[in-house]
Amino acid sequence: MYAVMGITGQVGGQVANALLDADQRVRAVVRDESKASTWVQRGCEVARATADDAEALARAFHHTKGVFLMIPPDYDPAPGFPAIRDIIAAVGKAVASATPGRLVFLSTVGAHVDAFSLLNNGRLMESALRDMPLPTTFVRAGWFMENASWDVAAARQGLIPSYLQPLDHRIAMVATADIARTVADALQSHAQGNQIIELEGPRRYSALDIAAGFAQVLGRPVRTEPVPRDTWEHIFRTQGMQNPEPRMRMLDGFNEGWIDFEHGEAGSRKASTPLETVLRQLVDRTP
Image (cartoon, rainbow, N blue to C red):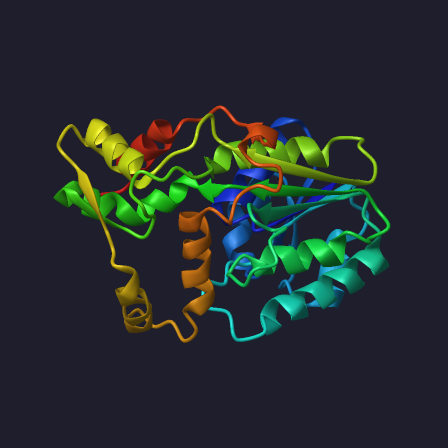
């Protein structure tokens, strides 16, 4: 039995599918049981838990060979990251109580970096999990290729505003399908101790590459322009963010190059899915 958090999301759902395809039993960890009907039909157990509820997580993790751990995305964290600290405390208690066989945590590129940014969430969780008395794998994934879903409507209009700058600066990106396959393999492995897998796609991509990929898929010209740095805070606050600085510093980190893998491009694992494949999927399923 494997417990899968985030099963209603794009990574967790694909992890569960990979495990089921391998004839493994899956326990779907969900906040809302009404959203788990598809997984029940596929034979999954269901455990209701939020990421900050230690007792519920312990029940979800009990009698499992492994747990896929991911934290809910929080693009607007309060100062001091109190939400992730509550999750860390709950996960620690749950793991100590349930003693699953192993953990696989979906971390992030740049999780080793001390500099302040939104990715401090991953660094804090990694630090807490590193001393757990069970085999633990940290999958440090690059920028999700599926983040380009935010750009589909703009691409159809021919102009994508980009926060990735300079426009020709390439960064590590990876498809969620490749992340899920890596997670499922790590859950079923027999590796001991702590393991770090830094994962990206077959090559690095820039904002210009995203625009060119959309142009190829859509069959029409698509260009991109940088969103001026001095407008970011106003834009994000207009969108409802209360504390945009962590997100802004994350973007700075990608753009300036200090958010990257600990061992650089040479030390990362290369997945097979190219950006163009993901962009085509996004266009095909987005009206």
